[in-house]
Image 1 (cartoon, protein in one colour):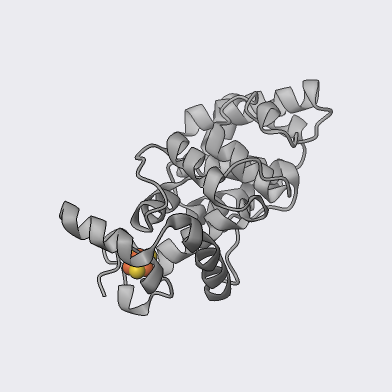
Image 2 (tube, rainbow, N blue to C red):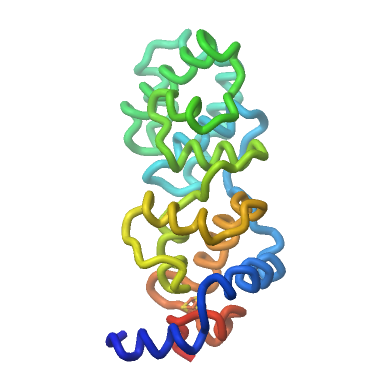
Length: 222
Ligand code: SF4
C-alpha cells in the first residue's frame, strides 16, 4: 500500500487500543476451537513436542511423537539410549542432531535441578538447553500461566496486517502485544491469530470478503 493509503486506512479503522477487544472477541467466536495443535499427554510431552516443532509442522511432530512417547515414557529413557538412537527416532522432524541434544540436555536438567517437573516460570524454562523464548512462552501458556505473547509466523503477519505493530522481529512485536492485549488474553490471543491466519488470512491470499475483522483491519482489501 502507498503511504497515503496506509494513513487513510489507519484513520478509517481507528486506534488499535479501541480495536483490540473487538478483535479478540470476534476471533474467539469465529475460532472457538482454537487450541494448540500438538498432541501430548503430560507436561514433559508438551515441552518436548514444542521443542520438536521448531522449523517443521505440527502435523509432522504429531506423527513422530505418536511413536516417540510410547517408547520414551520417563525422562530417564531419553538418557538411557545411545544419542544416535534418539536422533533416528526424531529424524523426521528435521534438525534431528540438535534437537536430540536439546531433548537429552533438558531431560538431564529436569531430573537434576527440577525434580523431574517442568518449571512454570519463563526464566527457568529459558535455562533448559534448546528452549528459546517462543518455546518457553508456548509451554508457560499451556501450563496456565502465560508470561508473554507467543509470536510465530502467523502472529507476526496478522499483527502487522491488523496494524497492532510496526515491528518486524518477534521480540519487539511481543513487546508491543503485551502492552496492547489484555493480560487475561495472553494465552488464547496467539492461538486465535494462528487459526485465523491458517483459515482466513493466509500469507498468499487473505480472504478479506469472508473475514470477521474486515471493518477493524487497515489492510482489508474490501
Ligand atoms: S481483513 Fe483481510 S487482511 Fe485483514 S485480517 Fe481479515 S483477511 Fe486479513
